[in-house]
Image 1 (cartoon, one colour):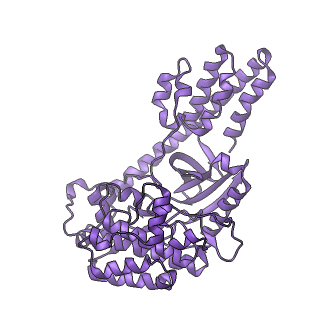
Image 2 (spheres, rainbow, N blue to C red):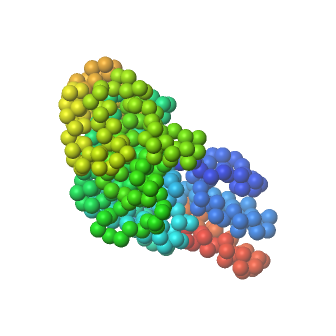
Image 3 (tube, helix red, strand yellow):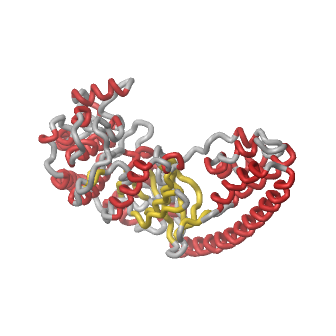
Length: 450
């Protein structure tokens, strides 16, 4: 099996100190830290703190054991491990059982789910994605709303985002950088034709799969020109380093602002550094407004002049002097790629990921090795390290069987834990205030509901 790279970075669980402070739980928390130390579990800490000491540890153990073994079902999708958390939502890896496929589940953060404008934005992203069906755009499968929670079931990209790929300040090879830019340009060409502006083009929203595909993700700030805009006047949307200078003057998002942001991404991808810097956001905005940046060939001397001209035109301070349409930019990028690329584009990207340590020999077993070596003759592949495809398929079958057995055992443990918890709740109702018991069991009921 190929190594699974988190689709949107690595999520960091919140601190576990409240649990570790409970007598007898330190060792358990240490063994289950990645699952236990989560926002859903943390919400019961205050309630537990009001319980008499005798009941506290018993109830807490049940809560934590359910946290470490629970399986949550959203429609036909089973949630598994969290893979990332952003400012608006948390992303889980999941499995759509009816179709037997991996999916990503974007779960809106509880605090934001209480805000009507944020819920509208979340729904708008889902509807924008539903109308955009393209190989370079992360697809959406479903939007589920239940118990005041909002879930977006999406395509799972087994790969890495461009932000992680560029960490360390080292740019990508020129042909790889152009492959990324061309993939994003194709995605934007599709979106712009359907009157959707992305408004947040940046490396962390660009995925590179282990199969060599480039995917544009996160249309959370996207603007559909055919519907009313939710943006308040004077509010600057996007990530500071990638916003177009006209935004700083209060202008609305257009196709030209997406093209500008893609130019910034290409600059960074080639050079390994962002074009604009500032110790504060104010200084950064001032540099963007003036166009005060080093020329690309100054920080990346090996960059061809023709490619530098492409970046310069993307990042022109005057929107009217940029590429008129992203389709024109895409054609120019592909023309440059034809001069540099040898063999399959996907094979070249996979070879680069293998060289960087993200693609594994197991993953390469399902691919054409001849095309990989043609795309990158310098790649060193040891046939002894590569598992034959038949062996990989047998391994997958065994793992699926083990997963089913694990799921059955997990279901039994959850039912047992729920039964014991409800029994304790019934017993404590006679000796404790009914209000406290209800406070404790209410989050348990809502949490365990599918």
